[in-house]
Length: 397
Image 1 (cartoon, rainbow, N blue to C red):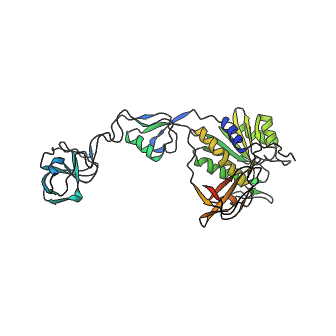
Image 2 (cartoon, one colour; image 1 turned 90 degrees about the vertical axis):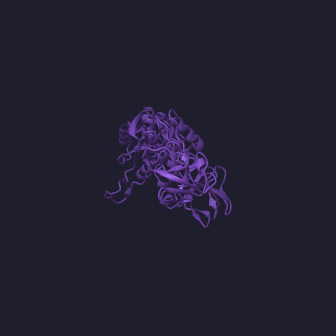
Image 3 (cartoon, rainbow, N blue to C red; image 1 turned 180 degrees about the vertical axis):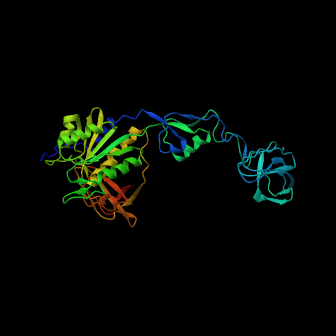
């Protein structure tokens, strides 16, 4: 046994981790319809006005506003215009053109009367409510002007921003490539789901939960084969994974005789920290090997996944040049006493119950401590408990 004797605070560990991360520099071009969730590498400028013409914002009649003063007014309809059609007639005083939403405004017209305030008798249109110049009209370039930046470089492409790029007619954009992460589990007892297991073996949870987490924030994730508890085998596996931007191995980072990940890390590179004052997840380790960050995560599933949220998500968001994913938080009372270890930063999973938070944490070795939780609360170092009725902030998973 080799106990971890020095623990660093959670915030210090995260700062060390982030200092090791370099944002990706390489870019690639992708069709705009596949660009959602990527980070734009070059500003997209509009080569045209959007919309490229004055257009009707309502179904109704294109008119000269002066012709609708002192209603009711009778106008003569001279043309019927649908979206995509260009007018062939000019709207003069006393006339109008029936127009659909989105259709270009005909020459002479300066407003649109909604169909709901009109009556029709053949080509005679009776207007029961006046309009002002520009009413129910979307002006040319009201959305985006030619030469304007439609979307700025460095922006995470949400569906709306993809739409803004499409609006200016751009079919392909330059984006930063996705961070490449290789994730695997260590341990003689670990088997992949779908395989037959022998007595004493368990299925690999961590590789799959971390894959799902990192894929959800835009990483290109590759799963490694489970690796046995042997320094030579671990070193070979790490060397073979260093073509990735980040390598994550779970298990083998604790204090047991077969927890030899620290030996492999030390032989291949420099261990930056081993042991963090958090619960769950104390035996977390970070090394620099051939210039790449390599992470040793706890083998216990809840410890591993909670530290994935705590450390891997912010690190890989920095690498991907994207903001942290939005989180939903709510302040509610604790339904029961939530105990903590005062010498560690506690991440405690909870369920929502009767408008409050109730503990969901069983132990760090079971995945249901997280899979059956709605979120978590963080209890800082120095606080031994949250008492029933005390308000807590729940971050939803």
